[in-house]
Image (cartoon, rainbow, N blue to C red; front, side):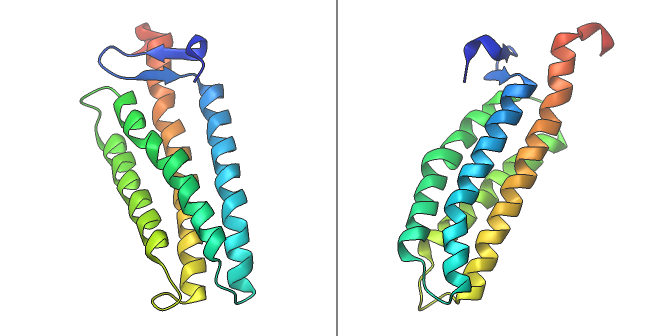
Length: 148
């Protein structure tokens, strides 16, 4: 993250600005989709996507899941429901990634695998939108504390 575009709440990780976060989110979602598409294409063609699934789950671990602890530190202590929702989504993203890593031909059908990948994509998109929605009021408060 570019520190010139980051804002800081005492006791938390720096907050990125709106545009930077939206851009990061769009790129991240695009990159995950790029790795999910071959998995979905092969499942539709009734072929097990061994290497493609490994590529997807490795990318999720290296790029998405490793960011979650920092994201949780980004929000000030004492934030209520929305932060708890983001944390629950983090747990679900990790669980879905674990499930995809364990998936194999013997225990998972191709339609079930495709459904899990589609579910992960929907959750990630929803999560990125929720993160932006949660961050917006925090940024507003920092930019204009007199309004809050």
